[in-house]
Image 1 (cartoon, helix red, strand yellow):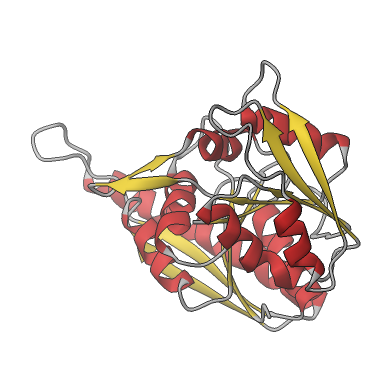
Image 2 (image 1 turned 180 degrees about the horizontal axis):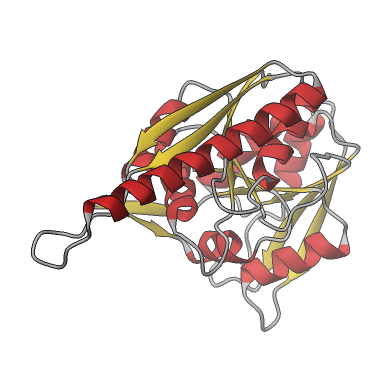
Length: 276
């Protein structure tokens, strides 16, 4: 069961999308929701690379605090309107430290929700998303910055390639899958070395034993990337949520995403539940 959820509230302009979506998730699952808004430390240049006057640093700090307060206000308004159990928190962190701090907090929750990083804006949400995927040990829903619809599970699409991370994602998603009226298991063909793999029938049988009705589909990759093939099928089938394993590894505190995961992070058009 999912009864305790944490969300990283975007402090960017017009960044209430992820908070509103998280509220709809908590309402649908009857879960408690904790909203975190980070007050980011001012960016101070490394010694010898330049000088920023103290008043500029303080102004930046004040702007960052104002942005966090606005995010908390939007969150509180949304949770009050939905009538859910919720707790808003403001925390101070550096741009690089926020990811580690949020991922560690996420370990104490059933589900973590983050927003997709908006293009040509600060990388803070990208850092938080990648760190949370690899370090929280919990399933994570990433919400597109263009998302308008609330949380729905009418049609859930599972991306299946028989891997460990895909299996983990399916297991983590079962509490949500139980609320879905349609579940698709989608495997992409023409991946190198995977043409002869199981088509998803076995995982379909496993989910059937949980009382879930599933359809199994093979999707031709053709001349496009696997991520594009998955997103194209998701659009064609009007999927509300995608479930997939998150690939990659950490290297000296640098997170290296797998190709499909990286593409989904950048190009997602629907919320995606990822597990690593």
